[in-house]
Image (cartoon, rainbow, N blue to C red; front, top):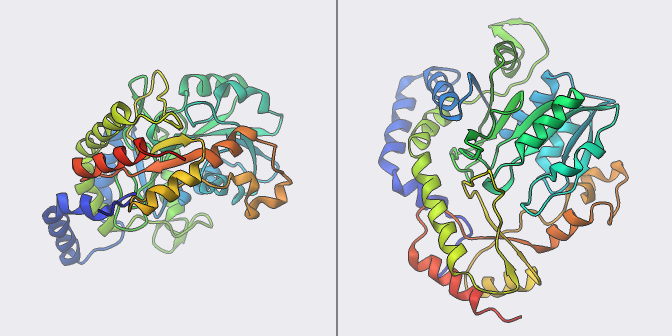
Amino acid sequence: MKIMPNDLGRQYSLHAAEYEQKAVEVLRSGWYILGKEVEEFEKEWAEYIGSRYCVGLASGLDALWISFRLLDIGAGDEVIVCANAYIACVMGITMNGATPVFVEPDEYDNIDASRIEEAVTSKTKAILAVHLYGQSCDMTAVMEIARRHGLEVVEDCAQSHGTHWKGKTAGTFGRVGCFSFYPTKGCGAFGDAGCIVTDDEELAKKFRVYRNYGSERRYHNQVVGANSRLDEMQAGLLRVKLSHLDAFNQERCEIAARYDRELKNSRVHLPRIRPGSDSTWHQYVVHVDGRDALAEYLGEKGIGTIIHYPIPPHLSEAYAYLGKKKGDYPIAERYADEVLSLPMYNGMTEEEQTCVIQAINNWEP
């Protein structure tokens, strides 16, 4: 038996007829950019998340960098971000010329809020709260620190579609919530796609102008903007996905609960969920003493795994110019050597789950 770390075909097959019907509907409409599908998806996503406004964009990275651009955060400014984030989070900061200031993760794999305040300087303009793996940061602490220091808060919700902090949906705490709809996400498109949510009417309007070459009306350009438009096909297909998102999240919760109950190997440390948060289980990430040996062992048994992420951003070649070195963020660096994402996807069979569980329980390095 071969088990993929993520099998997108399974999720597609669950509702294939609906996707295909919607695709044909969009093709036959003759309207493919900024039409009714985008408008309806924006309304439906805003309602689902609990925000006043949603603006569809071309990708999650666009959501990040355009957010900082429109919040006037750039050269000479600092943005606090977790040291174990995906590199796209950092790119959203640096593409505007701002400087990322890294903070170590806590035992829940997200930013350690107790370390944020010591990273604040006179140049700090924002905190980027990245909700990794499907659970929330401590947004109570993040928002209180931001309030005390007059900082903007941007949330990266790429991996937390429908996650809650104390009953409130991730993405609704800060000035802007940024979402990626990359195909592997909880509500994944069939290509690249993203959006922002906000309660700020003027800011939402700025996003709508900026995403379309800086133009609210054709050929009347107010600013030098970008081409970052969620297209009609992806919006239509995302509307279908959204109608099933709660069921998708529940299914992943059930798989995670079985892993929690039945994985019994002292070298494999199971994920912990922060009190106050739930999880939509974008990834089921374990910490392993001898991670590479386990990954190789599982691979030999036909079980695929992924490392999220093997190189912390401060040690990547792309950010060598920041002058960071190994040892600067030891917790994030240790996590990079320990974390392993086990197979987790909608449509995963009980037999496949059993195979993963038994293989890990039988592992003796």
